[in-house]
Length: 539
Image (cartoon, rainbow, N blue to C red; front, side):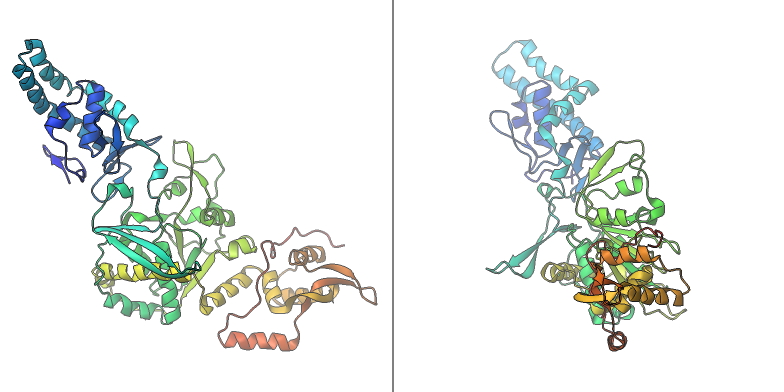
């Protein structure tokens, strides 16, 4: 860190500051002061007075944003303006030392008094606001970069004592065989990282309390490993899994303690979003301000929400766009619309599951439902647990690092219990989808009377005291599954080809599979397969 005359100036340039002798060679004008500024903040200037390298610069100008500064651990996108002006003031103060050098040289050359005094006159003027504004105006043209030049590496994780870098290692056939992690034990402005986790890396650190309580929260080893991989994936800036993560429990189950810990440990990589951002009630028009969405721009990797209200409905479109790997639009209050590509993984805690609007594969393949089923007995909670876990953050970071490595090799593979939970979630969200799962077999070679299919569906729905869709709407829903009209049978009944009703034996086998803990069920159809059409009049 650099402090001059009691002022914090951010990070010292890695190569050390320039000498007064070097700086005195630059012209006594605004351009010369701009070069002095660039050298003071770590930029390199060649013998021809051209800016040659900005990799070590600790102050930059971002187009359409403003000044940004490196604070010794990461780039600060908010404090740059003040930091740039403090550096400009330092340049102005340093001019007096350079003036003495130039004046002494003029005396040695026996120049006129005007030439001897000129450096001091210029040095005195450098403290004027006009001179400093001009210095910054010229300097920014040489220090200008794009905002997109920051946070380019999704597999870099900045921590308090350095930066972790993750890389996949592939065999000669291109298969990922392992993931390696390297640690740079210093913070380098050239890495252009704007965020930092609030934890130090120590590869020898342990977390016995965390692992003990984790086994209480999630007794199944497969689910603990899944949680580790989810968290590791969440620590990266990668979005290829397109996952929207839901933690469901009844309370006193550890999910809130776990998420509170992650939010704090992740530091500025984490953000808390209004739960309405991902609900139908929170959707706004294209021109409306969306500050809660806008604040998730940049390298925000962990996005947590509060519990949604009972009977809340998810915004399928928002979830798809936020997890889709493309740009979305947002707008801060009293500012213009801008685009950004989200990298955050949303972790939503809930007691009652929010319901998706549609039933298509596009939304359901994104939802990852992890149940927190093991409730802690009331009155036995350890109120000191958050403090104990905070003391183990370096060890917990090692658990997260291992999760990153596992994810990079294995990907995000849903274990059977998660598949079971998602299957139940999906069927409960759509009675038609539940009927399809329980009663229908998608078989290209099969043909079934349409009336038999509808009778089965209608009985299933009315037994639930719900209103069935019309036969026309039912037919359209089947067509979305590629169960289509295919002529008539020998007695004139309309047939549907591509599907048949399950036999009693098949339905009994499904029950056995469910009791054995197998996720069971059939594969859900491609996108659109469970979209319910408008309820038209019957044919």
